[in-house]
Image (tube, protein in one colour):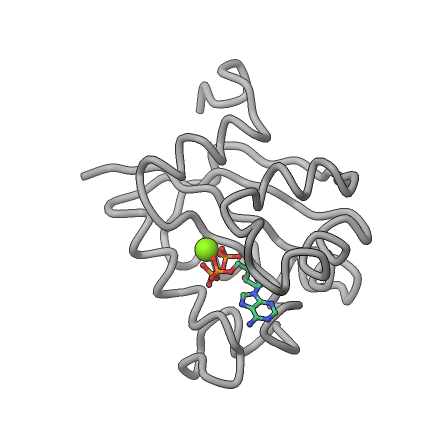
Length: 139
Ligand code: ATP
Ligand code: MG
């Protein structure tokens, strides 16, 4: 099934100059980049995005990090895009991520882990709408 998923190149990866490298990997893996932008989230916007994690002990630190500088949200489209992109992303903690995954190659720790990916069709729809309007998704 052709799906859409929301990816974010997180502030750590933007700061260390990994945007181009990550985009090249995504294109090479066959994803269509349907929409892309750069955004500097406020603390409130980061809290809104990660609201599902609001009870977790790392919520304050995670939302500080996500609002610490520009990030690059993008919409990827492809066959089983949600699961396929999570495979390429690798485990949350880069120390546990398989060799060749984005987090193994671009991330530094389990919070500053270079990329985000939606985890279900429901959350993909919510997360895509958080950053992009219908017009931007015309493909
Ligand atoms: P994401 O949702 O960003 O794609 P994920 O699904 O692999 O990552 P989640 O469990 O949804 O991981 O956690 C969301 C984000 O919160 C992680 O990507 C990471 O930045 C941060 N995070 C998760 N666990 C921890 C932790 N134990 N300590 C610090 N930060 C964490
Ligand atoms: Mg997640």
